[in-house]
Length: 127
Image (tube, rainbow, N blue to C red):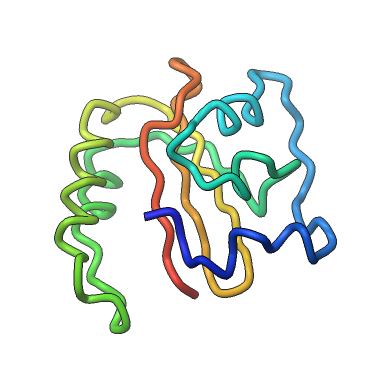
């Protein structure tokens, strides 16, 4: 589940497309770098495409776990939603940093708990 093989060497061949991030509250880059489950291309990035801070209330949680499968990846979608549900359930009522990393043909979404300074869930989706 670490993304398409073709994306792993992207940064060896391309200019850095990342936006810089101000690390005033905590070092989000360090949290991402320390998550060994993430692909190396993500762990070693110097910035991110977008970062949102959001409060995970029951409504947002329900939206996140009831998303319909994109037409091109119906296989395995139920498992992906189950993993998302299991990972995010303990964080209802808390703030999360949602980090988006877009590479050609794929987008990674990484949920980070600023309180625990850890990655709580991540997934990728072909674009």
